[in-house]
Image 1: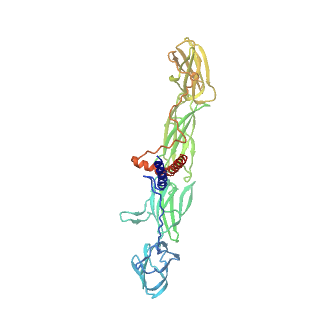
Image 2 (image 1 turned 60 degrees about the vertical axis):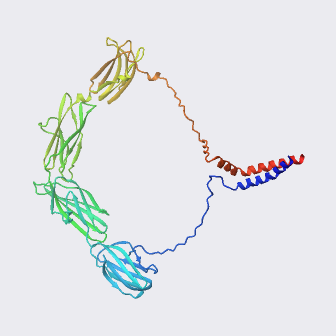
Length: 544
């Protein structure tokens, strides 16, 4: 037994040391710690301007400076200029420059043989209007470099393609340019001038000048409108009000002049004459009519329209074939005539049905009439409607009457219950204010027996009373909202926690792997425990 204890004492330290060593071994299945790996990189940068190409990698490209029309133009850049711009070329390099070739659209325009490491030259580029490719090829003793850029010459004035109300410009499959006609004829005076602007550069200003020559009061008159538009971009859209022709006096012509100016001062002008002929009568639409509450009258809302201009709008309290009219709008000056006019006449209508005729006349004398019939009694008579789902008995001797009064001129509403003989049992006043067009009601009234008769009395603005009666049976009860009990409902469900318990990860691997993993994770604690046990055994041995 003593030898066994001595052997255990010798084994315990060995096992403890094994556990200490195991503490430094990662657990089975655990990810190894990240390792930082340093890389040493070296990069050599070669800076070459965009658009410049060097075909010898062992040589350094020359320094190329190009100025077009006084503005620096980097390789790969774009420049818009006016007629035949000046080109300034400045080249410096480490090696002698043998050849310099200046090309426009791949055609050689200038060629130089400097035989020096630097070169400066200024020349004129004879270009056609449009966009061109500028390239400069330089050959040194060590290689070839090519510079490329784009130059656009704007040597022409801007152009317009007219879309409406007149057409001109680029037309046909070949896109040939068609000039404006000398004159155009339209059938409306209020138009939108729409056009597209074409230019190699930016158009800085558009001036539209419209002059209308006519006669008024026996004398010739001119009306001129000038519109200036700055920076119009690529489209032009401008509203114009043109004057009508006056065939009886041989006048009434619009002269339209348009001027375009681009940023280089190129100017183009367009001019044409426009005649506006009125060959169609106006159009009249009755929008609605309302009774006037203070008297037996009707207010009519209507609109009159004409494509050229309205000379007058009025009405007649009678049919189309009647005579006379009351004017609501008149304008004889052709430059001020409206093309759209809303009128709201108030017409007396005392008894029965009355015909009212609206009359509109345009500048050319074309006349249109629109007849409408109104009945004041029908306009002020309201509709009475009971709400059956909300009407019925709410107690042994109490009923509820619900509904609405609408579509009329209402000055008073009352609801009452009646005996079988027609006598009033109970009565409530629902509305008795000013004139209104709609009233809703929901009244509780006493009732002696069933079926209970309920009557609604409505007074309109003419003093006429309108009534409607229904009978409510006790077998038609409804729920009284005042007696309904509120019911509280509770929802039973899962309880969410703001700090949920994290799920326990699943154990995977074989039993030996899990044992080794456990030992590696708790090796230090196991070593201390075994050392403690060894000390206890040693102490016990000394006592024995």
